[in-house]
Length: 389
Image 1 (tube, helix red, strand yellow):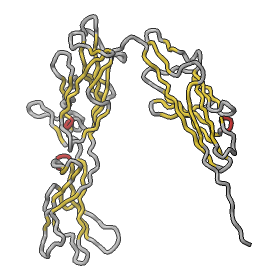
Image 2 (cartoon, rainbow, N blue to C red):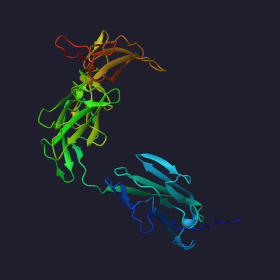
Image 3 (cartoon, rainbow, N blue to C red):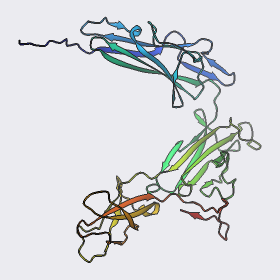
Image 4 (cartoon, rainbow, N blue to C red):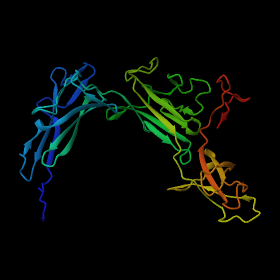
């Protein structure tokens, strides 16, 4: 019997989705810190967000239009400060609908904090019964609260909140300058304004740069009037450093007698020492070593997109290792030298299989203060602390 198979050749469904405001309550709030009020107040009149899903079937096998009632696995998530948490029916801040014609609807019963936006994420599945194919749906909405209060002073620094310093490529010193921004304007550097630069100490507290003896050899504050700049020697800061700039501002008088509190305008930042991973290479090694040669003289070499890195030995331990080669099995490497261009012995060579040479780069670590067994700073005869790497 001769047979021939026939199949339905369905065109893919077109799934249309959106997730937005349903009703008259807007999806953006304004907060007045003087009155302690939100407009609109979601605790009084909730914000309604609706996921809308529809299908278009070019074959007209399935009816076109809304398919919210056919959604399955409807889930809601709240994302705050990078943390994603599933919203369940027991969460009083939200009211959710996961089935029926309004599946994918969520009521927001809580207000959004100023400067701390919240992302609401909805996910669902729809089964195309023609092909037994599941379509996954994912949409999000950003809840934002604007500042409706009078202009609040904000510290502005010419450095990112988080910076990475590569000691092989970048200069040791960096100077950070502060401004106090008043909306579109900048406060003048006068008697109404004083910046204070502070370091996060090992005990978890903040104190002014220079306030702790011996600890602040890596920082210096400008002596110009309002202390608007700070210079950091990143080579001396250790593995990382966390600082902040606090602005004491009194538009109606001087800053004398003002103290720092959580409400004081401030900006924190950190600097981290990090050497990226480099692939080492070397030259100066002969293809074959003549009999009687007891030393070879390789030269370590590392390049990146800017060319050869010249100060490699200042920050890295350059370790040379060798192993007697063998027909099979793991090789056993031992260290035979160090440095950019050492004289390396050939004693690992065996007559039949020769020797395998290896080069390894290990971060030597940052310079830091030398401490004794009691964690006290070791100083020289001039009272200066001693650094060790």
